[in-house]
Length: 270
Image (cartoon, rainbow, N blue to C red; front, side, top):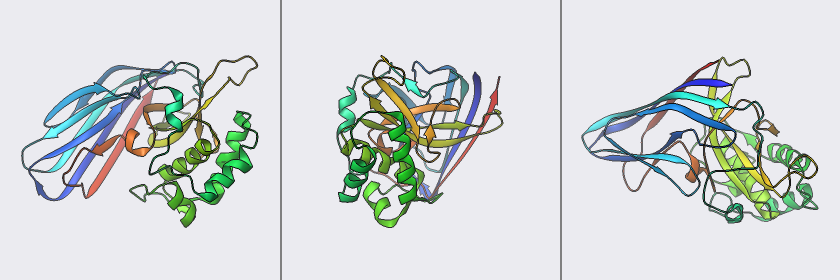
């Protein structure tokens, strides 16, 4: 499947700022499940491209003249395989074991550990257990669209609600508490008919063997919100330990925070 993608993000500030620097992760990852073709990043100021330890293609955007708005446009074509939920091969220099480490957004509290013990009982590394866990997480944390920024797994479990990123954080925290490496994924969810696409987040979990008997170790992608595997129709932008590593646009260093962020994605499937 080929997808022509056009993504516009506009950052608006309450008053003019003289300097801003943003970390962009808006280029699809190079993986066994997808490949970006003719990808372009257009933004004011200067951009510097780099690939981080997670294998994400990023750009550091620096704008050093007065502005109240920053408009970022990315476009190109992505080739996706039809069933991308299982990835035995992966870009990035980090060992899967590095995704066992906790972060401020994925800390496991007593409730998290209890849920992990209940739904990943024998650490059998089965897809069924992961889907069972995603349902339990969604049952404990009601999705609250539009809330930001993410506050973390423990906060979401405590409130009983959270944004899509924190629902993914809660799932990741449970996996790590059970000894399963897990990472945060940002990207696009594409309509099966190819009529629309939307920014989305999900999770990868490292399993010791593939779904079929004798399968090799690899990452399995789980859309926690949909309580399903993230296979066909998912375009991956970035992965990381949590939202901070993988969010598409992030303030880099000290500086003003945008008052509003508006994102629009359009696609054409062929």
